[in-house]
Length: 314
Ligand code: NDP
Image (tube, rainbow, N blue to C red; front, side, top):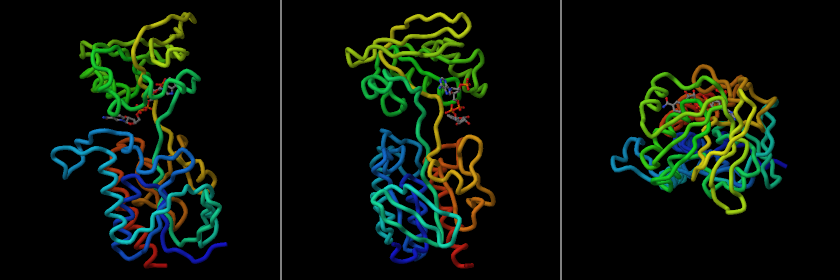
């Protein structure tokens, strides 16, 4: 049973969630923030699996991702945010007050909600990919690139992320091979051009990685490629595999509750408003274009201001 009705619940603990919490707690809304923990969530968001962050303003020497998130968290706590290390597993946004169910089986009621659950990297879904994660298979070049000094790495994907990751990896690796399943790249021209001009980067187009070797050695030694045109397979030796095939927004629990776009991101209008009055969304769960800590923090601030205004009017 619900004990009391909260003013504001924030779901998610990345830059968007914590920034919303800082603003909401300073506005005396006593927000409760679910940081996500149990269901494979990443408390602190994607910056927790990042090393150096050099583009967050205010840190001219750079800062480690986890350290930055610890500072966000402390700042939210300082002004009275109650942080719960639980996941939200079910929501009912059809009736006011809104109801949220946590992974501990508790029920919470609230007048307003800010969704800031972020997005997660996509994987191919291969057994070998799963077994070799952390042993040469990664979805974060920024985090793991430096382990591949003078090595040959494969980057999978044909979008801007793949170009960006490949360009970044070329700082360390001796060779970077971009493997893309289509004949044409999806990436913007400028990003393609940059990658194509880089002497360390080469492309294998119209090909898919169907297996990563070698699970028995517990390290990456190569990939099995399927040529989509000829329908043949071949092997390519490499020391690392980076996935850059996009992200999935963490919106499973909101299906049928708030309006999502066709990729599953939450649709917002007029700032951070969703189609349900009193439910706001911010950060990567909305934004599949910019996906930066600073933009997530910015929209987290907007969501708190929008929620504050909504609560004052209702
Ligand atoms: P995208 O969705 O743009 O691209 C994903 C790529 O991965 C596509 O080429 C897609 O192939 C491929 N892909 C998807 N699923 C699979 C699969 N199962 N197997 C093999 N390949 C697959 O994602 P990005 O992360 O690249 O970009 C997301 C957004 O972020 C874009 O709007 C992008 O512009 C932006 N961005 C901007 C950057 C910048 O400007 N600095 C940097 C990074 C991202 P296919 O083309 O065949 O569908």
